[in-house]
Image 1: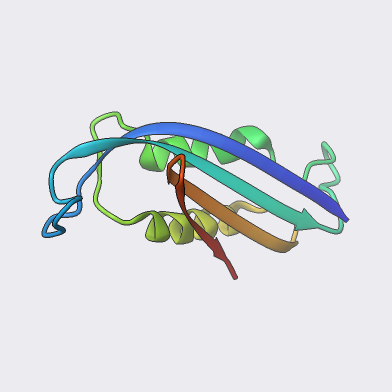
Image 2 (image 1 turned 180 degrees about the vertical axis):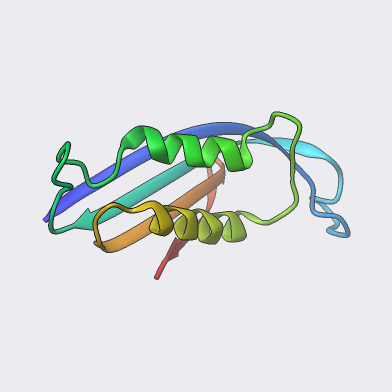
Length: 111
């Protein structure tokens, strides 16, 4: 079994309208942890999935340039899981996505 792990950091504006604390526009330095278990590698380069593809996917979806994140860390973890599953070149045994909103708070999704 191969265990793959990628950590990506982004900065993003965040606002959850109607929420008492998060309703005001603020920012976070999010850390995404992606862990994938697979039994085999791709035939071409011997990857589980290209590390760069995971970083690109996260940055394009959530990085701060002109965007305001309007969903919770829990939803970000689920969305990221779904996006990664869609681009996997090999069938994974397991995908786990953890989104750290602060150094003490994270949400995790694993199906």
